[in-house]
Length: 203
Image (cartoon, rainbow, N blue to C red):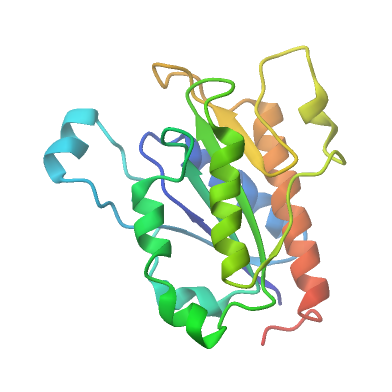
């Protein structure tokens, strides 16, 4: 069975909700899916003052988990148009895997969340994708086969580079149905591609 890892960092739960939708999509394609989060690196007093909420339902990932999967889908909120330091710190520890080529030929994808409509979603997706390309992964985005991202009837995230959500300046806006549908669509596609590339068996 194809094994997929949805790996995320979330400060306020928006990216965590998107991770659950990505995982759901991958499961509909018959994959076995784990959702894991990266460790918090911000000092405890900042975490407390900012009111971060960790989703304790999801175990903390270790770098050496990554080779166990056929597909790796990474989500992080945007920080000034780039990847969060928590996710960057985790990915910076994959040097040993890179050296061995341990992730070559796996399938990868990216998803993100930002406060505003044009708050750096695409540059953040590309900063995740850049990491994955260096590690040898084949990238699957969110193509326009997902028609929901074309809507002008509502404010919505979604881009051909990966699923996205908009949290609002105060973080109160939760992922919409369209955004969650996009995340599911991408998760399903990645699982389907991973199954094809791995020949349906886990190596």
